[in-house]
Each structure stands twice: as structure tokens, then as C-alpha cells.
Image (cartoon, helix red, strand yellow):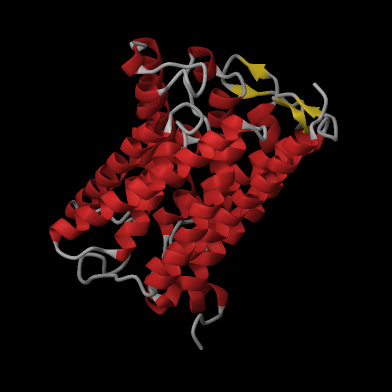
Length: 402
């Protein structure tokens, strides 16, 4: 197939949209922490895209998208960008290989940024760098191969249009594992650690919503009808999630503005794996249910005293899990060639269940082991005094609000 200029333009625009999501995560998370660690929180997202970019062009892309090795990992075809040029991409023949590589790179970057939820306000910068390189190489890259590059989950028939398992389950359940290792922030059980700037968090969420059109519609890999369908269901699910979480918080007291944007993100997360397989009415149901179950997961997390600080597990982990299962329920042959449980296809739903269980187990266990390893060697946390002062001063020597 010849390279198509329209498809190429759409992939490059989509990559730029997804790239914007990483600083969007930084602003969203930055608004949710205390003012003494906001620079640190945003910096971790910028650091995430910097680290992921170098790792990806050196080895990550090859491990993820190189020739299949026993369904588990990619070969070294593309190490150091060897064989990655202006020719057609093997998995997207209407766009240049370099453009496809870059599109996949920004997914790896934003996934790593989501993971920073688990370590907010208490991780050593050096430890984050080491953990990030290990995690991207040993967790994200293999999962990407399993699902998107002919790995064993792809062979099983599991569907993940834009990253429900690869991005959201992996980051959400990895965050849960790392939070258990690094422990609670000082004072977590003694007083409320309130967000210092909710408007900043809302701006970050708006950037995420905006960038998510590239995330999902870009994953069609062509500028055509499937991209348009993914564009519509992405927006529909986000809106439904926002309204559902808003209503849930309203029933418990006040209609939370932060809850509303968190619900939008939950809806975006849940529709991600299904975006190329379901219609708008199914997206409405997927998003609404995501808003409610992710809000419930947050309340549960608070009730058991777990400091997974900024709720990557509750929103991305639980939302991604629901979205992956929903793909196997609502997949519509009028949108794509696949059918879900409501069309009598139990096999597709079974494949989604296996993909969810495998992704949860792999991401959680390997992340837990990696966090323990880093903690045992160089230590994960800053000192208690540094945490008390705040990471902006202690680590960066800078103030957010002079």
C-alpha cells in the first residue's frame, strides 16, 4: 500500500495531541497536590516524556513492535531506530514508519506520566528515573507487544483499540502496587491533604479531553470513517462519565467540580479500548457506568486508608478494566467487524476477560517487584524532613508561588 498524505497528516496531528496529554496529566496532578510540591508533580510528567522518548527510540519500540518472539516480546529489528525510516510502517502501511513510531512513543510517555500518581510528594528524583526506565522496559513494552504487535493476547483475539489494557490497566494497577511499596505520605492519617489548586486540575483535565481525540481517533491509523466514529464515541463517553460522577457526588452532598472532570477522565479511559468497536449509544452507557464505578473505587480507596495519591488505580485501573470488558460486551459489527456478548459472541467476551486478568496480574506483580528492588537498593522516598519542606524546595530548589 502506498503512503497516503491524509492518513500521514492525521497520525502526526494525533501524535501531537497525545503528546499534549502528558503535560496535561502534570497540570491535573499538580493541582491535586499541596502547593509545596506542585513543581515536582508537573516536572515528573515532563521527565516522563523525556525518559520515554529516549528509551523508545533506543530499545522500547523494538521490544514492543519488533518481530514476535513466542508471543511474549518483540525482537531487535528496530533497536536504535534501525530499519525505521520514511518507508511504510509494517502495521500501518498508509503512513511512514517514523510517523507510526512517534505515534506509539507518545502513548508510552503518557502511560508513564499517569503512574506518577502513586508517588506524589514523596519520591526521590533519582529513584523515579531508575524505576521509570525499568517499568517502561519490563511492563509497558511487553504488554504493548502482547496486544498490538502479534503477541499472545492478540492471537487469542483480545481487542484493545487504543490502550485499555496497555495504557490504563497497566498504569492503574502498577500505581496500586508501587503505592503499597512506597507507603503513605507523612500526615496522611492525621489531617486532610487537600488539593491546592482545583482550577489548575480542571485545566489539566480539559487538555486530557482534548488530547484524547488523538489518542482514540488517531488509533484508527487512517483519516476515515472509523476515525470519525472513534471521535464521536470518545466525546460521548467522556460527557456521560462527567455527568454520572457529578450526580454521584451530588447525591452524597455537593456536586463536585473536581468530581465532574474526574468523571470525564473515567469515561475517556473506559471508552479507550472500545473506541473502534462500539457505537455512540453504547459509549453513553460505557461512560456513565465508568463515572459511577470509578467514583465508587475512589470512595473505597479512601475508606481503607490507601494513599494511592491521585487515584490512577481508581480511575485508570478500574476504568480500564471496565472498558476492556465492555468492549467484549458491546462490540458492534456495524462499526467494525467484531461482535460482542450482546450479539451472542461469548468467545470475544472470554478473550477480554483473559486479557484483563493477564494485564492486571502482570502489571501489578512486576511493578511491585521493581518498586521493591529500587527501594532496597537506592531507596524510593525522600527523607521525612524533605517531605515536610516539600519537594519543590527540597528537590528542585524552586518555589511555585514566590
